[in-house]
Length: 201
Image (cartoon, rainbow, N blue to C red; front, side, top):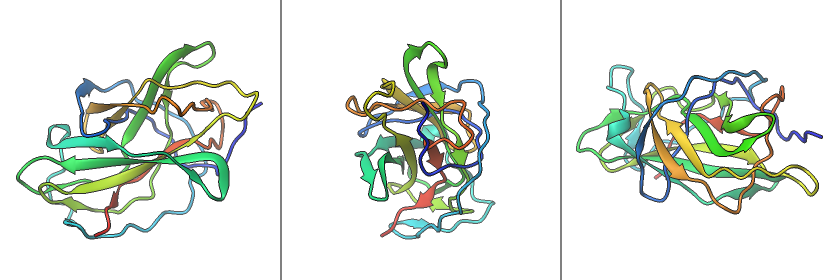
């Protein structure tokens, strides 16, 4: 039985993430598809060296960034659904634009039905434009559903993420104590990746 929490939005998968201050570049996988009804767009805060940018600001490239995977936190209003911060840090000495929805793939054991890669749908609910100055960050949130008792458990080994507008990925280890309920074929899955927001001051 498939359990679906807090339905998501427009799907178009890709790649996902790097953890705890370390990141490695990897080639992007084939693009993914899917569909669902998107939730209402979220409002982004600005500050901490991150400001609204014009579309003429050069985008941050994969080489400009490192990605950090934060600690999972269970949603108060949706038990069994967890948010994990996906934070990109500008490691260069220049400002670049980081906005849109990153691609995220969870990579783990070979599932008999869906295979070893879970392409997360994307929800375009971030800021329209966003500048990240040298040494500062901007974040997206990954939301996943943890299996309930009796549901099949699948625990990713890593996450690959492609920053918006790029074609190569950063990689991070997935928390070993956070299994994920595969909902690849669901119309309104409870696992997805949100758009980039400016980090608050």
